[in-house]
Amino acid sequence: QVTLVESGGELVQAGESLRLSCAASGRTLSSLVMGWFRQAPGKEREFVAAISRSAVESLYTDSVKGRFTISRDNARNTVYLQMNSLKSEDTAVYYCAAHLRFATTREMTRYDYWGQGTQVTVSS
Image (tube, rainbow, N blue to C red; front, top):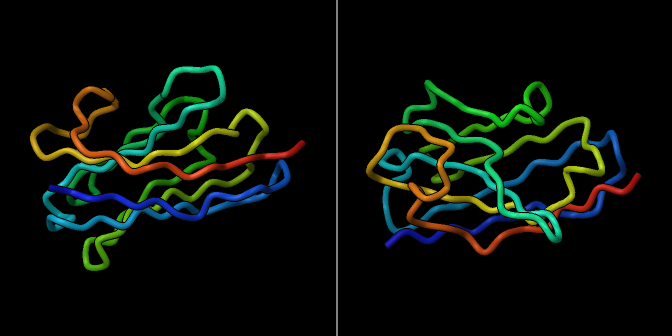
């Protein structure tokens, strides 16, 4: 069983930066493909970013490319999402997710483990 705990969400102004963290326990992080998803009020949960086990490969949704960076520290069992130039449309609950079985993917159904989410609010 894998437990994921997100942190770092808060209220910020448009244009500011924020870094989210996801602490994993239960399995060695290096065995897990990790992803970040988000869900805005009244909208479906959507893919944001994913990173391969060795951090060689990363994927991003188009709306965050060039602004967000996903990274991982396997020694600390932690994954990060650095978010720069935040916009009001980035407001959402951000979820960390993990899976063991597949390659790096943006497909939500492939992820087996989910955190409880952390709220990011961007005020314009």
